[in-house]
Length: 199
Length: 199
Image (tube, rainbow over all chains, first blue to last red; front, side, top):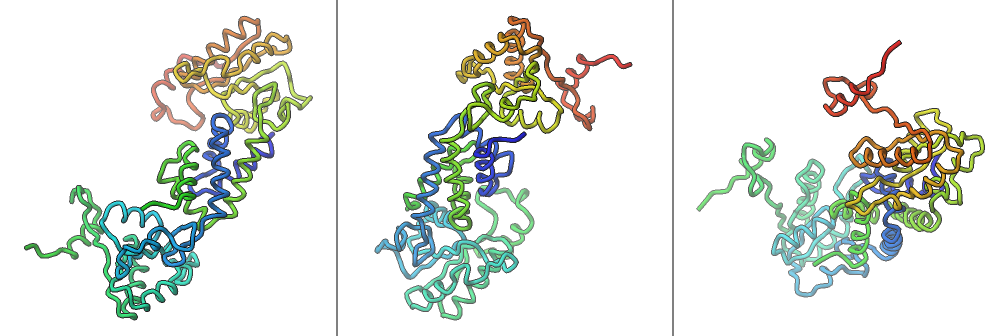
């Protein structure tokens, strides 16, 4: 004995979302059918509209509905600064936390040859063209401090050097409010070797 | 600066699912847009079809596409046995694990007056009618061993008594393969008071 075909199909489809397994999919399906059918209808429409309407900004690869995203189409931003990040969420994090007023380049991932993600999957031809254009003075590399993020950062720095654009990487070390005792060894060692003279 | 309107709407709609907060919704939206647009289209259609096509079995309240669910429409099952469970997933668990060949009644929840869930929300009028019908000989109560599940079980047992139908409750105690040392006190105490004579 099993669920009705439509319910089976719903549970199966829900599993296309990352982090959602069989049990979570069941729980979500039951919840939507039992308590929130309106929410399910809205979600269904939002999914379809997003998939059909959202594409990548032609300049920075951010998700956008038009050719250029909000940031790239803003005239007042400083075009001499370009910040490379791994994901759209990183753009939002930098925008929210810092006063950065330059442009972005969203890699939509990191170099990972084993998963078939090489320079062309990250749109690095477009980045190279932009570095060669002469407007960008500094490439700020803000990939994640992971093995893949570090490898990507190294690759980007070389790319910048080829086009004689200055490259910088955001600082890594002990987070504010963190206690040395509880910070992992790698971070602490990095913080030591990256120490700066005071005064 | 924020995401494009369609993306914001998608992230917002995804949050109608239980257990999905802002960060998970973002991660799911990015994953679907970047790596699985086909999956998103399939999910959108499955949601809409499920919401429009799935209703409750008129007899047992299980999710079904027709008036009666698979189990209620099977002639060969034993109509003298009725098992009350809290959710459709419980029906599947009992079907998979036991040789039970009777019918079910799915409460779709448990009594919880503070959340506004009373007897009528659980369809207990329909259950009462069925108990009064004369076909059911035994009501097997398989609600969860939680405070609300116990209260619901108590209510169901009284309902059965009113219609002179025998009521039983599935056994609770130390699970198979469990070690006494690691079983919680409530379960162990329950297992002791529910001991049965051997031989």
